[in-house]
Length: 83
Image (tube, rainbow, N blue to C red):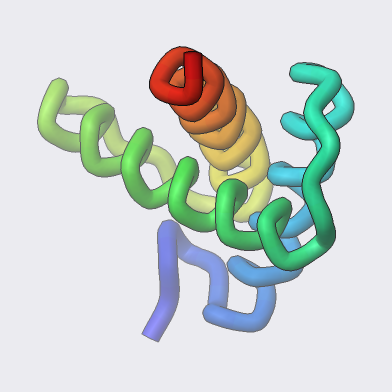
């Protein structure tokens, strides 16, 4: 089984890195576990949206970029809901 052309282990590692980059970019303070969750969920959600729009991306670099953007969106939504 693979996610966007990367395996599950690679998806966790790349998702964690994407979540960490989003945390640094958005200046939020979360732990490692939350970084991994945000990176993976952000990548899955944004990839589903892009697939629905007719775009499809595969590979670790695309997973990293999509995970970063998706995690940034999730952080922004979380901030908006909390306020």
